[in-house]
Length: 133
Image 1 (cartoon, helix red, strand yellow):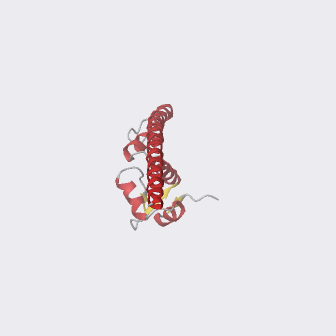
Image 2 (cartoon, rainbow, N blue to C red):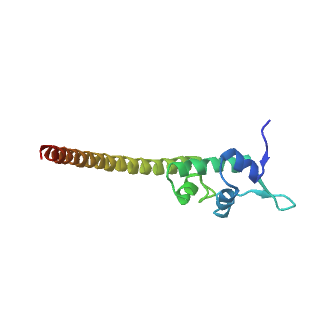
Image 3 (cartoon, rainbow, N blue to C red):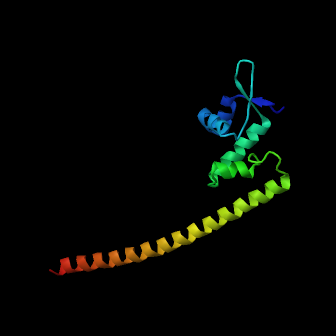
């Protein structure tokens, strides 16, 4: 049987994040837990899912503003179709950035390999000259 509500420590333990991180996402308006009569936070299944989406978005390198827009928090009336289109736009942008970084890294790798070969060649020359003296 699935839980209907979670404490902050439940989610913290399950998701491997600190309670402070969860409170931070709440302060940013990304999740909105209910409160008990004793003012304890109670998170719903929807809050749990949103936290998982937030963490996935962060792993993919999205800003919190981008994540909020993708999961529909910036516009309460967003329809699922628009939410999907928005997520696709952000995803396409992120893929372009990743491809550009990969090209830059490949160029850097080539440059470093060339420098390394030159250094190896110079080292061999110096060692040969030292032996011949």
